[in-house]
Amino acid sequence: MTNRVPHFARMAAATLVAVSLAAPLAAQESQNFFGTWSASPQPVWEPDFFAAAAIPRSLRDQTVRQVARISQGGEAFRIEFSNRYGTEPLVIGRARVAIDAGDGAIEPGTDTGLTFSGDEGFAVPPGAVVWSDPVRLPVEDLAEIAVSLYLPEVTPLATWHNDGRQTTYVSANGDMAEAESFEAAEQFDSRLFLSGIQIAGGDEPASVVLFGDSITDGDSSTPNANNRWPDILAERIVEAGSEMGVLNEGISGARLLRDRMGVNALARFDDDVLLHPHAEVVVIMIGINDIGWPGSPLTDPGEPAPSVEDLIAGYEQLVARAHTHGMQVIGATLTPFNNAFEGGPLEGYYSDEKEAKRSAVNEWIRTGGAFDGVIDFDEVVRDPDDPTRIRAEYDSGDHLHPNDAGYEAMARSVDLSLLGIEG
Image 1 (cartoon, rainbow, N blue to C red):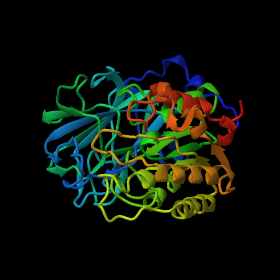
Image 2: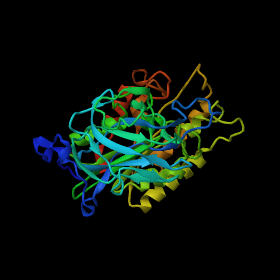
Image 3: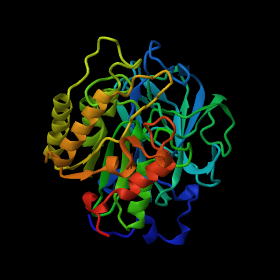
């Protein structure tokens, strides 16, 4: 990747759209789509989990409006909806996109209908995804797009993204997909079915996939503020004049080797990383939950704790699979977690023995030679007086997750040349 002028910088000033400008693309024009936004689907956990899922069990004759801030803009895009964990078809009555105006509203004159293989609606089979037909709707780099989805039938909410950090608006009964303002009967910070946005690229479409757990997902960052470290990295990439898209495939609570809050990393790696078109680089930062969960209320009492060798073997599998697809693989060190969740219901997440594992894993990430490059987030956020702890000014309060300042420090520490970006 070299420095390139952002999509929107090459557009005429009149790219704020009217509906009349939106139209499907011909098939031959849609070959260079690449990812500009993503949210990894996960199954809704069972009622016996320590935390209840903060969404309804199902919806019927209701409209869902969700907002996504893309990384790279362009003149046309398409939307992915996922029914990965559904056991019956996801029936889409209608879906529409527009420029977000805040608080569930959309910018007048930007509402645009989506079609699926030429039809307004689509029944997504269990376990499947559907891509909308491409639409011409010029959007700026870092634009916020509102996606509205009308669900006419009883729709179990089996596929979601728990830690969305963005308000999802759900209507009372009726098709509200075209409404400029949105009267929500319910709001929550999780995503439903919306899993990807691809933008039409030029001659060199490319994206970087950030694959991880809650720290990539942005847990404890300010909701609706786009302060996750992937968000700030996307801003830096745009500022550098690159057209590389940024895809956040983090799941809060995710583990490398076991399921629970999302399936294990090895199981979801194909869908969440390798299947993205034109994905050139993946940054892997996962494993702290494999270390911290055993012996805490998050796991069954008899669940064995993985060894350092177990974790290394898992990383090596991911690296080998990414290299098979021609991707560069960057390893990111695990950040400090001394006294994580101390005094709360998840007491037991941290111990000195677990800290020794984290230290050993980080040493391997830095020196083992498996990765094509390393981002040392541990060094960025650790307390210089006690490297087992996160710096106080970067601590969200739970001693595990960074706050907004911590995420910004992480993003600004990334050497963009690791992603193939000059500057």
